[in-house]
Image (cartoon, rainbow, N blue to C red; front, top):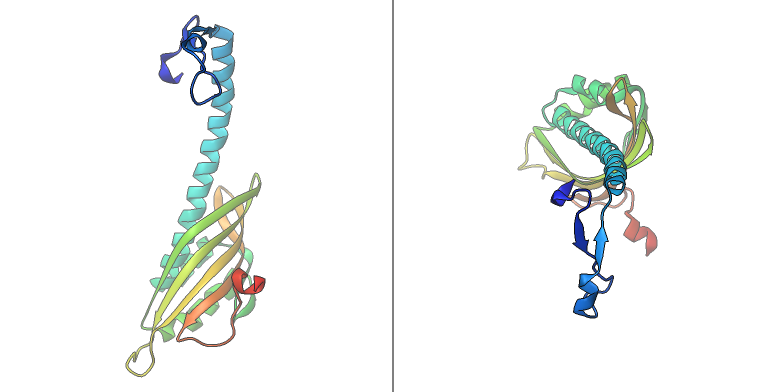
Length: 201
């Protein structure tokens, strides 16, 4: 146990107040028993295992988010099949609902080649576990797109959010549903999905 505590070890009992009322308060001993130490170790051990397990899940989901971005930007569209479940739902403000991983790959193959390059930066990742094998997530995205002739058509940059539902399948976290919400875009245009600040206005 941290700090080198052992059965029979005597430590000062510290008042709940920031400062002890008197030096006498610091002299009253609190004796740790072997039973106290063992129970505490077992309790914290269980908490540590649960916490570590969820940290690993969070890392795995985050890695899959990055894998999606790489598959998109490197035009390795078949790798999207490793990120989505076979019967997934994928939607952008312009695509409508695409049903199934085959539809996602077909959409990527149709849309992405029109750009000379793209880069998707993902951040502000928030994950909530809704069950042992399910989770929801919201992440921010900055998606930069360069047209083949930028002197005639300026770069397009989208700021938005990915709203995801995740499921654990055969030991791998995959996207069951992803909806892309547009907060803003350059060159600026009307339309898109308003962000929450606009909704509250």
